[in-house]
Amino acid sequence: MNYKLRISDQAQKKKALLYNLGAIFSYASMATFLWHAILMLIEKEHADHTLVLYSWLTLISFLLMAPYKWDKKWLRIKQAIGILIVGLASIVYLYCSIAY
Image 1 (cartoon, rainbow, N blue to C red):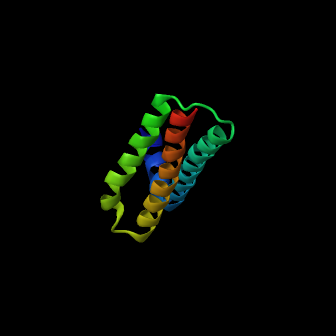
Image 2: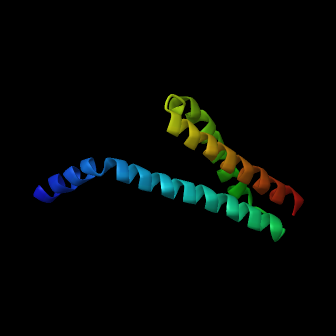
């Protein structure tokens, strides 16, 4: 039980660091998502329906969560970047699904 309290104390002390680390991983995952879409476009690969559906559902979730996060400047910037990147990837995936 004592170790749980120590972990909780450490997490409280490092809250800003943990948030920034999480934000870095979030941006990295969005960049990977877009990178994969661009590679599929370059290699003229067909995008499966599940991939297209996943990307569009992710975009819709970003759009629906936007008003909740719109009150704080950094959350607004992060949400706008997410909408832009996931939106571009979704368009590319849809194009790859239709064209190839």
